[in-house]
Image (tube, rainbow, N blue to C red; front, side, top):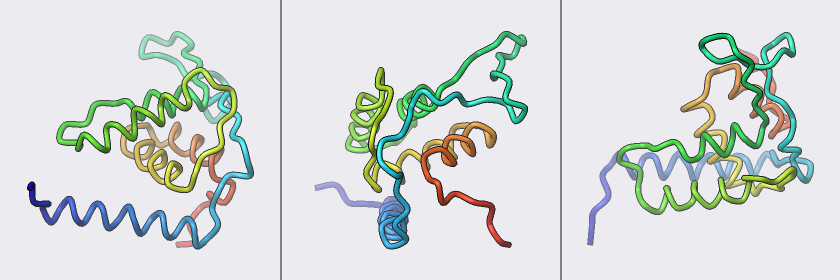
Length: 134
């Protein structure tokens, strides 16, 4: 039987606390999320590639692509969750997410996407996402 490291236990505890906080605060989507919503630059223009060519992104594409980014050291169970969640999203126009799925999606968006893309995506997923009052 493999033993967990303190880092794995800390990450699991943090994830459990995030899920509990989401549930306690009733931070959920108001039903199905429109995955066809475009993710754009602040001025509303499409995102562009490094060479300046338009590279249109939708909420669904951003989430699905981010979920399947390879992360070294990620446990097989976590890879499996991310795969099936990306599969649930791929090719759909609307999806309703559980609080646990939202936690995972937010986690990977803020880890792997630019602030612009992650911020827009989370704002579309979570209507309560507002600037902090710090």
